[in-house]
Amino acid sequence: MTRSPASVDAPGADVWEGLVTTALLGTDRRTPPGTAPGPDAPAALLDAAAVETVRRRAGLRPARAAERPQPAPEDPRPALPPAAARRLAMLLADRPGPSGGGRRGSAPDLTELLPQWLAVANAQGFAPPPQVLPALLDAARGRTDLRPAALEFAGPRALWLARLNPDWRFALRATPGGGAALPRLEDEERIQRLWQEGLFAERVALLSALRSREPAAARDLLATTWATERAEDRLMFLDSLRAGLGPDDEPFLEQSLADRSRNVRATAAELLSALPGSALAARMAVRAGACVAIDHLRTAQPGGECLEGGESGADGSTPTIAVEAPHECDPGMERDGVVAKAPAGRGERSWWLGQLVEAAPLATWSRRLGGRTPREIVALPVADEWQGELHAAWCRAAVRQRDAEWSRALLGEPSAPDAGGPGAVSLAERAKLLGTLGAAEQAEWVAGFISAHGLSEAFQLLGVCGVPWAAPLGRAVVDALNIARDAGSYPWSFSGVMGLAERCLDPSEASRLDALLAVPDEPENASPGAGGYWAEAFQRLVTTLRLRAAMTEELGAA
Image (tube, rainbow, N blue to C red; front, side, top):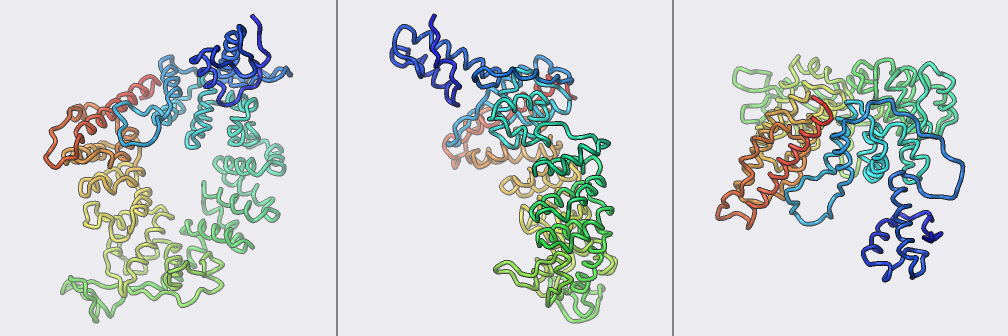
């Protein structure tokens, strides 16, 4: 058999597809690149396919003879159970279908199960089978959201492969030191060398990793070169202090308020305002407190009308909050992070007020407003149409300071007519407030929201909730989907929620859904064929939930 020299050339990205096409057409109609038609063409095709198969399995591009690479490092983690290894290969072999069109059929989307599979495998501490590493790296290359979990699971051998294939260099960039392990805390010489000589991405990764392990050591390391860093680098480094932020960081951040970069000053001020005991927070409390007070000369009647008079509750009147926004932004305010220039279309005074209230400790307001609780404060009327601005600033403060009590007050009851409470003016704001609550409380609130208002506005809120969804939330979602099905609308309007349900519903809910698999009777005003589409959607949901349960069992997870 004659081997064609062209068969060992380094292939391009689409070589395999080209070889498959040649095999389907036959070598009498099409020959491999670099091969002349004739009796040697079939053998050349087989040789090229063999080389490409080895490349695909090994993850290394064919090249001219060179020094043999060092062996791949050992991975000390336990091997995957055989059933889990087969499942992983199946998930990696699946490819998303072409987009377009609303009908997905009843088959589950395996690509959306891969992140959950990786999360469970990483929690169990398993190592991947070596033969799946190329496919795993290819999957991570195409999906940036998959990279952290995929690289954690892939382990040291993935970095070894990434040095041999430029397509996977992202794995090296994602690891400080070009794939080398981080220095140990006691190895001060290596830490200093990497900090002084490393690339910017390596230094950011080093600082972030050190901050997660020893916050004070990371801050001290940053201080050694702070004065000589570029402004854009200082901003990125300063942002790493969010992890583990505490009172010990205040002196460094207070010093950064005098930085020559406006963005650095603003970030330092934001971090200091997240420390309610900081000197900056105290200064902001004084400024904000001077702008907001109880108006003892004006009360609100039950109907909402504000009247002149004293603070009296006997007739059902309610005290009113008065607001006097700042008339100027002085240098002290600017030093503490207040941006003087308002965005287009925004009044300067309301812009300054919002920044002051947002940065003031929330404990300020109970003392300032008569010892009232957050819920009582939020319920008070605000004079002169300042309520929206004041409550929106309290929302931002509650998120920044992770204050659950204020978040509850601002969210209000999920069944309220406006569905967002008195201060949450958008779904995004509601989602941020929910993020300060515990998983069980989040699930309960969103379940109440869905029960009262349906699914049309719930997508962002569902994305905040912990996975798998708690039982009340899962029931609320399934019940709302069932109501939408009975209404006769197409399921495509709920495709986002259905996709979340496939990933987030507790797999134990699958048995409850069996009754929804049949094609329902369609009401007269139903969209044509909607019942069949819903049956497919619920079949896909049930199949996906059972697949997730099988995945968890195969990985030996509880």
